[in-house]
Image (cartoon, rainbow, N blue to C red; front, side, top):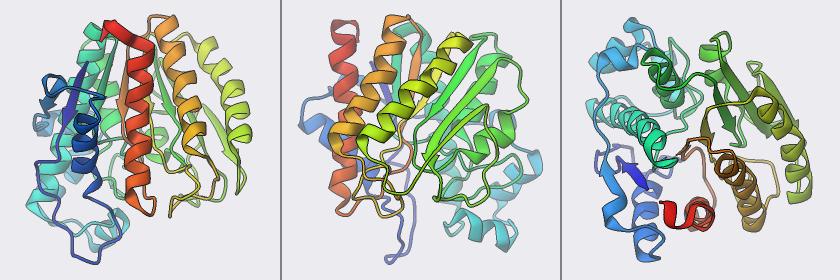
Length: 301
């Protein structure tokens, strides 16, 4: 299994910032320490080019991020202070997503230990998302005729408004977002299938709705899947309003990965949100996705 990482590119944040930027390296180290993955499965994410970024973003926006002359309102919506390091790190996240997408075509499954930046729109970022890695990788696969019918399964607690605003009208794309009804963003951009769960949704609530929603994915008959594996539905998450347990998230991952495995559909994993307190709970939940993948795919990866 090829897994791409970008935590060695700095993400400069003030000491009192609410975003847990340390979780990316923590996850990589934890996966290695627990022998869930081996060092031979880890690959350095390349820096995406401007041309690649413009598959899903306007050139004006991309160049503004590069130069650092973004409007202050966009900087505020992104939630990160601008720096050249932020631009490079964001490009690496995209590069990892595209490489993971190509790897899954060969190896059935792959991962990006970042990404799932589903709040970035064509002309702006928001919600800790600068560039939309899944939208760019989707367009890359289509442009290069590497996949035809692409499903995006987005199970982050926050609705993937950027995925929908960019890709909603693309042919042969199906976006399924299951999220908290009262969670960010306040104004949702409709996906092809949205399932909004109430505050306090339990494992049982979540898994029941997921099983129902997956029927629409099955009916779409994808030949490629992007899986946004955000773990912020966890009860202890600071930014989510659901009450899922670690076991519930494991069952969630099992449903998605077993479907891809049984139907021989390449799938790539994007990290998505996770803001638990302590952050080690989010790291463990992320790692469990890879535990599930190893269990299902066994000797094939």
